[in-house]
Length: 506
Image 1 (cartoon, one colour):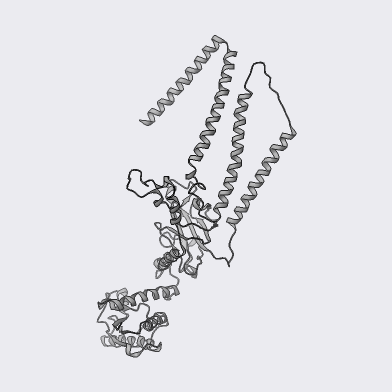
Image 2: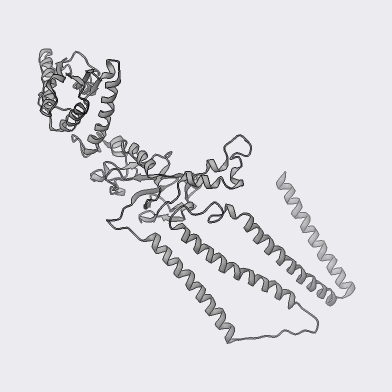
């Protein structure tokens, strides 16, 4: 219905214009074409002057009215260290071009009025003027030189690369239709190499080279995860694409760069305002204290729902809008907590480890040792505080033996060293080492093997300085399975060594 009404309005306007034209023709016949032409010229010149005034007033007025919703003005100041320089460059450009814009439009419409056709007045033609040629050549050249040089200085500050001794956080963004894969370095603060020939949609969508040691602790965010960045930290964003041209655009930080298939790009910036601080500033503006959902007065206010965002600034397909991603800037302490949690789930360990694509089968990695030490500390603390027998038992996951033997494998050293540290840290704890086997082989031999393995673990701890009066050992053979012995996985679960907290005098 609305569309039909609009169509009818335009149709009516067309009819009116045609009728005005006919009336003008009739008037010309009655009063003479020359007189009508003079009247039309005068009327048009006056209307042009009126249009000039209305146009400039509305243009400048609307710009002032909406300034608080434009980047660089009101609350939407830059949230990066270099963004103020970019906003300054835009302001200089706006002022210079704005002055030229206003002057040229005033002159354009004034000339249309002043030099309108008047009976008896002749036009004066000036084919050439050296002074004018010099003025409108030199002045734009000087202004353009100022803008270009200033722009190059700012560009070089943003696009300068970092050296090996610089402190920064590098992340990688890979664009594709229609999302971003964001990769963070792990504890080594280095991203692994990639090779498009290694891409596997199911297990390796980024083509990470798993033989690169830096790949072990790399973190790949899921599509629902926020991009979290620490404030007052230099960030280097490595940008790539897998299919078509995309653009990595962070409007609130005044940075954007094309993501080009086959041609890695980057930019550098430093966030200076956390998300919480930016929201707090927005709260000072009445328009940001309105309900986020106009139809629900009880909804949160707009400032509470504000987020920095990553957007794709290229029209990369019909679902281009879906590439929006939330960016959260936090304090260094909050970032350390967030990344520590992510470090417990690196992509390699959660997706590749132990599969046919794992180049490190049979090895116990340093990152696995670190994660296990954290886990073992938590389990030990819980076992000390628990009142139930089940929770007082800790499965020593990284204690291994030579096949068919009670001799400890060298890979067990990390777990047992950490266990000895915990026992030293809590001298009031008394514990029992418990050995278990699967059901393969003779029952009596399994019982003896489980007892010998528990004894060897106890001896290792005694050699590390643990008091012998605090430890005991027992073997259970195959009598206490925790998995099904008819599968390889179940038998592996049953071949285990445990520590049970017997007492804690504190």
